[in-house]
Image (cartoon, rainbow, N blue to C red; front, side, top):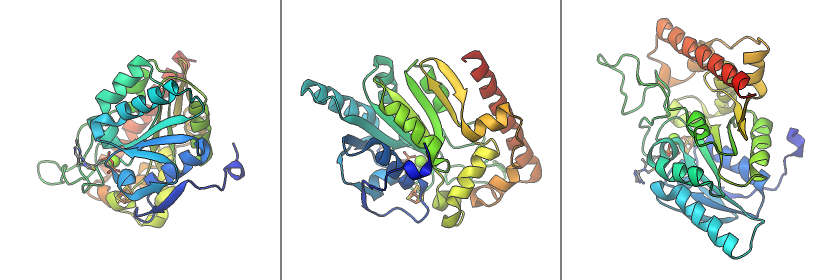
Length: 298
Ligand SMILES: Cc1ncc(C[n+]2csc(CCOP(=O)(O)OP(=O)(O)O)c2C)c(N)n1
Ligand code: SF4
Ligand SMILES: [Mg+2]
């Protein structure tokens, strides 16, 4: 897809997200691809709380996110309505932590839903607490930087793409709002499948990451070009890197120095050069692991 093929029709109504919010942009883009024949489940989260849409939508409790969509999918099928996409959107906290059982249950059963996780790497709507998707090195209000924890969060992030691949579902992918055509190609691919489809889209948050709002797209790009976030796709048992990540891992394109990605973000300002080096090393290792996975599942 080319960017000028993206429809100008907008299914978002007025909203109250912070300026530069990429979570809001993620939902805006997904709806452009899915169109008006979509029923949406949202949860407590920034997107759930701040975005209003011009399509049918239900706001449900975190643990029930996937189950609510599954119920709607079954109901529509019973009514003979087969041309509607049933979609859920939730944040990283709502997906990797609080709603994981419902999502896992749906994926294991093969229920017919599209689940999108927008990942801003913390619980933002309640004031920047760590989630299991928060990357190591991050300051959050529940990983305060101090004598005991000079480097912020210590544990690695949960890799939701690998978690979902373990369910052997038909389609799963990672994406970034900073690469909208790669993202929308994946939404298009997922839309046309049956069964549980999962897209994990990286979505910078100027408020929680502490950078100026006009830099959201640039920071999202640097997340990918530094190797901190990886664009990939699982398609009926085949795994591949896509877009910029493919060029970095397979074509030997040079990674952006990690400092360029972390430096503009206040949540990393406590990190010294040694700590940044460690994060860069982990990113290289993750990219290499994904490259090998792509070889193994080609
Ligand atoms: C079961 C339950 N636990 C906790 C909350 C409080 N809560 C509301 S929004 C939110 C943050 C959600 O984080 P995430 O899913 O990552 O979305 P974000 O706010 O980052 O957009 C939390 C913890 C809740 N509403 N319900
Ligand atoms: S806190 Fe972050 S995710 Fe929430 S509305 Fe503001 S920019 Fe968006
Ligand atoms: Mg979040």
